[in-house]
Image 1 (cartoon, rainbow, N blue to C red):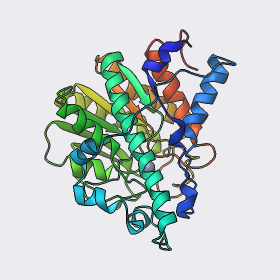
Image 2: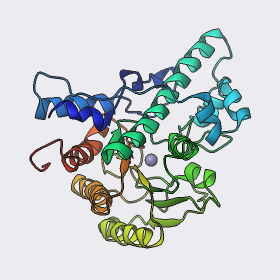
Image 3: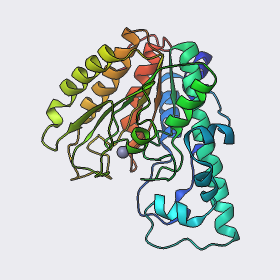
Image 4: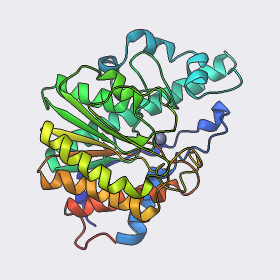
Length: 323
Ligand SMILES: [Zn+2]
């Protein structure tokens, strides 16, 4: 692997947010990006770190394109975070908490800036991935499901405001329905949301999507067929300038958080899913930017790794096909 990987990978060490300060029992895997980079280095460039692009904070102006100013102001309040992270105890409203939340918000803005950057790199170099983010539950005026800012919506609106794209397709294969993205773009004909999600799982109130593909608990074996048919249908209806692929490693049977909530996929199917999405848009010559979204527990990075590797292979960074 050479230095050209910088054109396709976006990451900062500051993505490793310390969410333990919030006191949530959820096993967040904030190390996924660094674990993926470490494994790429081990496999393809031993002894050398993998070159990647370091993002900048999403600006307040960019945040305001997707979120209302009143919500952005509320992000200073501990209650807003407690609600979004489903905390049973209220965070103390003191200086220490304020400093913690200021740092966390800055890290979320950085990850959102990373998605903006990955999308710009995709427009320039066809394929790119932000090794984090994918906060598809955040709505315009409130957070939800551990998602404070909707980096996907921020990115689409920021690129549209810069006249870099007109029409964007979001392909969301996270285990959970992307309710925030759906609600933000409701009625917006410039954005097509193809969402493949677990029918029975949270969020229980589903928003209207351009093309919704709910998968029932007993339908895991049909996942790839349904995804393939949905991709064909989406592309027959909508020709995007850019695709944002919300990857999601929580469809994997080791996705921890979702055990028993709906279908689960073996790693081979998760990998085939990622290849199918990436190959489909490469085949149509449409730029694609990938973001991580859900993935929980010690092994979560493994659910992302093959997709990143395949993206780099299709970008021409690797000479041999990804295993
Ligand atoms: Zn999820």
